[in-house]
Length: 394
Image (cartoon, rainbow, N blue to C red; front, side, top):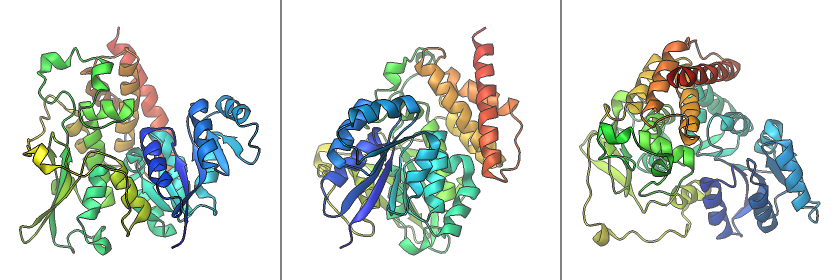
């Protein structure tokens, strides 16, 4: 059994920490080559002391300087900073596996560097694929990279499909992909009640332990909108073949329907270590530290149609995918800015989709013909979103 060398992009986030927990349980199978983080130098220092990576990368020079000071007694760990450092460790030949878990558009460049270097890429950053779609999947095909989805829903779909027909659902006899959604913490809230939602309420997900941004996305259903776009690119299908099912228990992570009427579902406790372990060890199976599923305690499952009137982000995502070009990148950028403003107390919860829709209307969509075009349009959309927030608050 060959030991895999792993780089974790976004090591101090919830996905990164779960990844390191799985690695911790299998020291014979996995070794850490590099860890990257944003600005949490103290937390990163603790991880570096435990896992002893060759490289540690921080988002900026100030955080890197602090980390280096904390690791002054470990000169063998080289500390880098910025996008250049991220891309360097993502593409380094010494690592064969890269966990791409940097939240948001910031994860695109290093994830793309790992893809172009032909790595096994464990994709937990949905925004990278949402933004660049066909360009990203073309890069995977050209480099021979092994792309394995880690989002619980996409990993579930992956597990329910024949391994050799992941990009050929029609050839596999697949008629529908049933993408599940928890519905978030406000599934039963009225439109009036949604207007008074606070950041603390939005970040308190009933089933999953996640970071702030993805928790808010789950609450608005934008997370499911982004996942709808991601599923279309990962599995080479269209929104017409992907149906969102609200499943409050978060036990069935997604399903695949076949032409003969069979529906295959992947179930498990709501713990990200399951899809992470699946990606790290694929095609083998390893222990992830996840509690066994107790179906007797759960008792029954519930399913509902998503309410696209109270939660318009799902509609906006589907429309952006249908528009094509740079529209999904604009959608993602506007959402990131709107969510940040909401978390800062500068925007109401129900204003998030308003800002996104207005930004989409105010930003010209162009052909997504290069990654440079994507990055330029991302920056433009962020500026348009900030303008719309300032206009809304006047």
